[in-house]
Image (cartoon, rainbow, N blue to C red):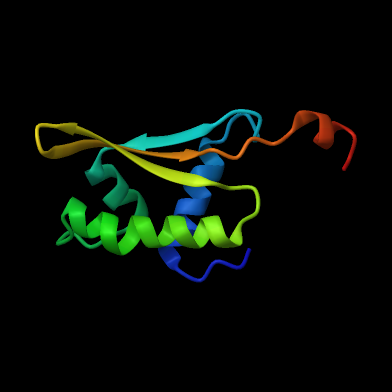
Length: 103
């Protein structure tokens, strides 16, 4: 694995753990902004906007560029103006016909 950012590495591990179908379906990592801060070890002083700008976007971009079997996308659910749910989808779907033939 050639990821440099500690946040990219942690996010990569979280996405891999959430991929129960081993690439045959879209895997989703979801949680509150506070859970993402805890999972990634972000400083307590970060609000969600800073977490998204300085950690999540950068980590997602690095993973998308360097990991061939991942295509991550960030989604947010809001209540009013406040983000209450964050989801990161891995949209890469492995072709089961190719993997079963050993290609």
